[in-house]
Image 1 (cartoon, rainbow, N blue to C red):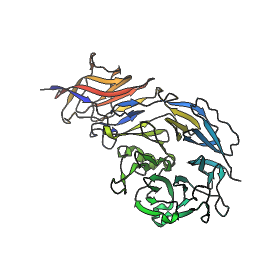
Image 2: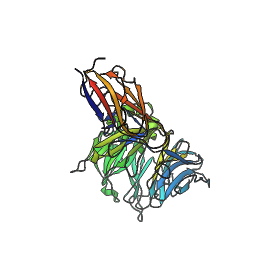
Image 3: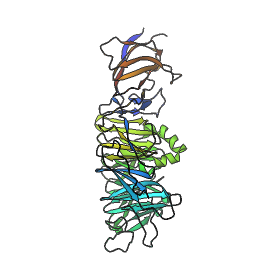
Image 4: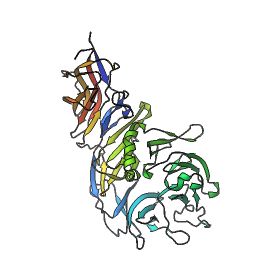
Length: 473
């Protein structure tokens, strides 16, 4: 005899998770979660809009955020102005000295040092470094080179092939190891500690140490203003494919994009020894093909920590991978943003998050009010769930949805075709207290596919299915 019961889907805490097949994926996970995030309560919220603010001249190659505004960097730009447009903060053009007889086509890193900047860029033949907008030189008068930089304890550390180079104390342009007034300049050949360190890619402060990363290896160094006290603590057999994906997260851990997906460099609470966790394993099957097929895209991937909620954003071409991490609510949830452009840089000023695209257009997440929405399409899909009875046939009698905003609700019940869905209803706000939505579906597994594409905010909290179990089709 068939029995009636209500099957509720009100746990989305696992977020986007494609590790298993749609028929075996765990409860609380989703097969698709686009243009939305998990909030602290575990409900799904539509993302804010990316609002166009202004356009920079193409001669500006990099955008950086500081507490007092945005800084735009270009080489040989002269006095080319930047229209403020709708920007709610000031924008300060920075004109870098042009190298004689060469053309710089990319600026790939800017590191603030007090009220000045250390900048790294490249031409078709080599890399360059600037400090206070002037080209940095070595002791012999040749121009300095480098690909990534990080300030630590009053010195500028930069990567240059297999070398970790560092300036004298309090002067990023001081490269003379014999300087008496600004001592401490020098270099370390990191390939002597591991042959995989031939091409160093990124640096990040790791608690009281520095993580120096190549593609397949990470070295943990204790670095001191007195270079004689520099010591290697640990070598880890994992690295990064994307220098700008490496950021501090939480209370000192580091997130980064590796060959196998997003990983976390964590420490033991007792020893501070580093270890690697697979915080991004839920989306590995999405990221690994992108990394494999588009190495340039991986190299240009950019990460930022969103203020207030502390979410990790990782841009890869026209997609932003978003991690919502709220330990108190046991939430570790990935989702995707499709902003409609390819991100070149993120820039944070206070609680504003700006994105600069490859055409030098500047967008502000949430607009000036940080509460603006657009009509971006939100897509949510659950796994095909068995309701704890995978071999038992079920008939759906009706559906209820707890939501805000307008949603198209479709249901799939074919275990042999997990992409087949039938529109059930279009609902606006929750359906409790009104006539139930009828649906005549039949099968052993149930998946719900929802889409929202309208102005304004939207939220999905729960879905409730009135089942008739053991029914005969």
